[in-house]
Image 1 (cartoon, rainbow, N blue to C red):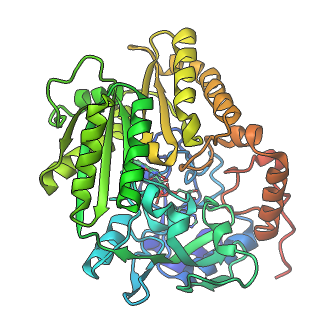
Image 2: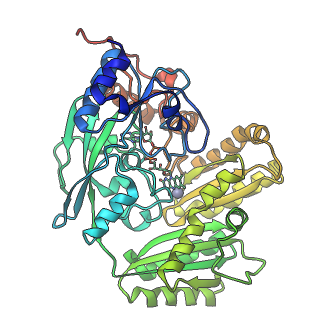
Image 3: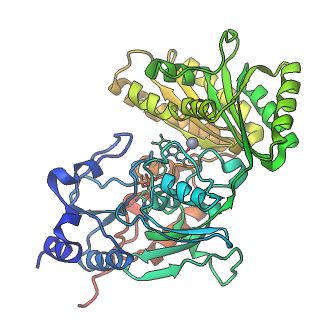
Length: 480
Ligand code: FAD
Ligand code: ZN
């Protein structure tokens, strides 16, 4: 029997996609890469995932796990060799259990993030992971990239929201680690190895996630500011005044919002008559008690008196809140519709953020006059999306020619300031050279040894995260 016929016997022909039906799974969201694959497999149960991994292990077929395919580093896209099997988790989308008394929800990996949020809300709870792609990204992808998003400041990233996992190992065994425990010190933390592994160690098939109380009230404000240091000062004041009630503090540069206005003219800024010296905007949100509103207003009033905030609008309805967030969440789409972009997803100690941006802006202005900086991100987490568009009218080739020097300059500065070259999006295929250049060599060596131990045949998402030429050699197939 051929590999294809065995796969079809296992999953049914409707769940083994080839040719035209497979196309949409073969290009990443940013269109950085289009690959080829033997097929796209769509298992419906954990047992089917385990059986198909055993089949691939026996035949030496590489596996590329795929969730919602919204990742930004081409981690879920196969290479051009047409030797790999893409495994889409999309059919595994059941909520298995909500344990309200334990504040946990157990879901399959293919659940869309927004569906998990909705299920939690229906049970009177909050699942706080929240990001622009939440309508199509999947929990398995969120955990495999250790996704961040807009509420990390208060609730942490995907890792901190996860209590347990179910995983199909690279050899096709099922590890049931779905405990809903907040304390469990029984040896090495396997859960945290699989989280953020970008599908290079095994396939996550289900997860038990933490739930929180639904906030009694939420308040959102949109601020106009002159400088990033002003935004940092307002963030510090808001943290001091609001504590845990402060759930989000996002910043957007003027050019980032100008791009949204140009691409989506139906979206309006909540402020009018914006002063000429306003160069930054911030989106601030509290969640908690009704009286947080007064503390937020007092903080903003003080910041305006000090001249740090130029103008502010406070959302008076859910629709106004949603419109403010839509502006923020449209930036990524506006960039992708504008043209090729050199993207950086960096984190720094919050204390070094302002000096990093000032120095990088100055370097870029000198080296590439006319290059357009589209900077935005999660200031509260020390995470900026420091993106560079070519000068107006630049071709794809022009931007590609600039890209290595720009990335090197930005990442050298980030690392010199004690930061990370990937805050929340992962390494995937696009940042593999950066990881090799900047990661501590001892850490890189340990990562290779973990990979060799957990994926001895090297079939799990090869060519992602760790550079292919240093990947472990495949071991011989087992005797049947
Ligand atoms: P995919 O892109 O399908 O896969 C990502 C990686 O996970 C790949 O390595 C894949 O092989 C692996 N994988 C997927 N499912 C599994 C599984 N079940 N088991 C093992 N490996 C698996 N990211 C943030 O962190 N914060 C943001 O604020 C944010 N905003 C975004 C806004 C927009 C508009 C867009 C398009 C993207 C944004 N992202 C953000 C990036 C992206 O949405 C996240 O990385 C998301 O977590 C990816 O989920 P996915 O299901 O699409 O995964
Ligand atoms: Zn982000």
